[in-house]
Length: 153
Image (tube, rainbow, N blue to C red; front, side):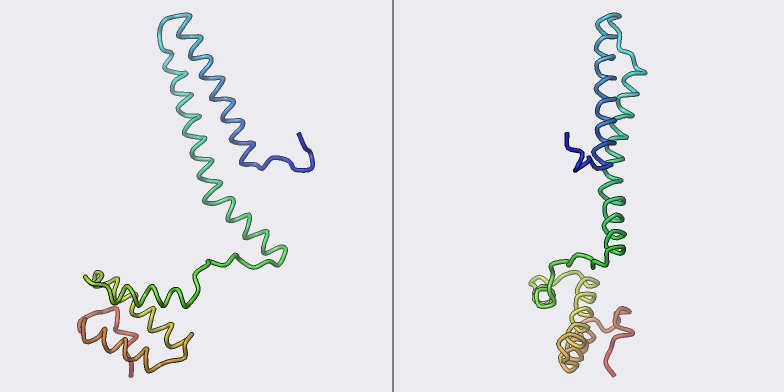
């Protein structure tokens, strides 16, 4: 065992719960062989340990690890990791979505169009292209409440 690289808290919790579940399983088998009956209290304890194992694994994956990365980055001055989606890739994906045959559902098409118009206006500095896209969406969906605040002029 290396003391230079101690186990993570997740590994420690999983180890404790795993050993406890193993001990309960051994006791359950021994009790069954000795009495010929299933000890339902031990079964319930084993299932509770299994549920705790899953709960703590999910808790570490969803909450503790990202929060630790965020706080560690805040303390060391590192920025958040990049998402890997460039503006060009997002524009291509949104344009493909709007040109799809059959067209996407109404709300999805409107949200994609609004996002694409925002990119045209802010990142590509092409307000005419953004206005044309919003005008096209307004003609296709004249009663769309999604377009109420983004229509040109």
